[in-house]
Length: 218
Ligand SMILES: [Zn+2]
Image (cartoon, rainbow, N blue to C red; front, side, top):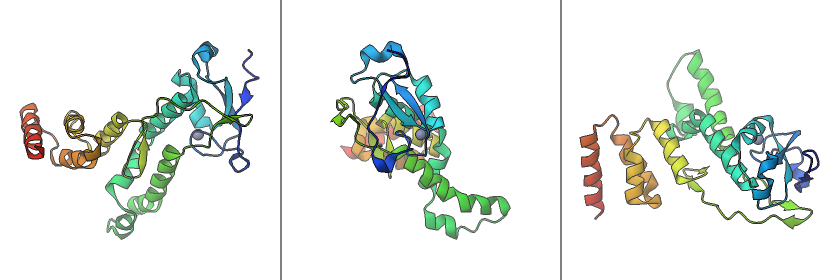
């Protein structure tokens, strides 16, 4: 099959010229899977889907097979790229930003744009596209779905969420994953809060903290 005649995914009227991956305006399209070598391993027909130039770059580098894997790869890449913008929502509320007493031209600019940057990044990362159909027939469902949502942001997986919060709050790189493993996904917020209390710890301190937490939970 030549690369220019993949079937176009069905696009709802209100999503014309919209990137399937992040919801930004798009005039471009990309083939899924991107490499012809991956077509035999894709669980669906080769597809052409609308993508913005930024998501296109990720797709070209990702080396996945299914549209679902590509979607996760783009989500993970956007989460990493906009980590700082996403962290604004973890560090501030909109009202706190408005009320903050910081002064100076640089901070005024930050205040004006920060919340907008945060909401734009979050909307792009959380964008879920539309139901995927080809000529009216739904695509094979995603059998690897395993996302994790926390504090309004959807992550590809719990591991991606851990990575994001370690960067956002400069957490100990071992403590948070250990706590999440021991306490479970349901206590993710608690694990983040504990980890924020103990920055710059030694290995011995870390072992003690984990032992204390586990004992408290027992
Ligand atoms: Zn996009």
